[in-house]
Image (cartoon, rainbow, N blue to C red; front, side, top):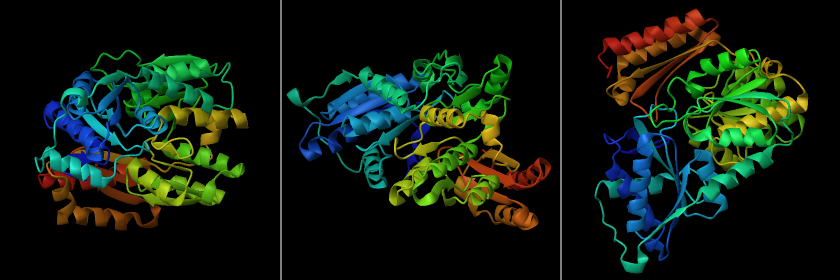
Length: 448
């Protein structure tokens, strides 16, 4: 991670540690880097979520791009995976998504994608940061070289059509609930499910600039659980603010996590001879139960650092077809370069319809170990991780658990947060040991 950019872009509170000046200068760099530096006119596509500040950052980025001579193609409110898809298929030099994903409305972020629709490489990000810090100057465009903006809602529509084409089955008479988190998916998701014939029931679909992720979406899935049961639905899907992740709710109201999704689709692929390398890419946060289920199914797995960029890098390097995170970032490398919440929903629908089984039955094949995850806001993440007393507390818990569970303490890649996770045989044991570690963090004065 750099000074400004973390594992998932440049994030921060709007006009506090992520300002409109940062957006203008980022646009200036990208317009020059992909344009005049190569003696050409750069083409950059931009999408945004529904946060109020996303409009400010959109115009600021466009200003910087045009000032450096680039043309900015605006997709308006759309999803992160749609920007990745359009960047790749429509031959843009790079793509930009304005979103802070699952964070509250007052935060925002700038995600950069290369011409292949992949997260920007570290070398280019380092150059962006150097420019933001004034390490070098770049020229301003003049006269006919000044760039322009182009309305590119057609790109969003093209992506919607692509998603519809992904389904092998009609969804006719299937009752589907969607929690679109008052975010990026609020227009696209319903269009896709309606087009495929589902009886679609949508919640959290009235964005006002301030209610994105507020008590809704994949981070507050309890509302979809209730919605599915009360409406008598067959299945439900919840997305986050930029719709690059998806969690599921079965017909009984039970949560189907990203780990369940990996298991369900990987075993479906294996049975059809489609699981290349017989391997699934996971992160260190995946549940014990997933690995036990994979062992039973004869499926190999790889563990990466937390972050869908690391999952994708591992998949790309070794040709694996499926990977993801417990949080619902699922990557199907044959179809996408990023996690795609709506695509994930379609793939789960495919398995359910192909096997003619309810989601509760499909998910029951993987037994989920109890898990406690506590997110602790701190002054300095490195200081916590280097504290010998914290390290001792973690070691003590690990020794106490032995082979009956595990403990993981790590830094968030996008927030000033330390994540403390414990898995064990019971919820009570998980909470006891997680509390034990968090208490040491508090006593040492690390809290923000």
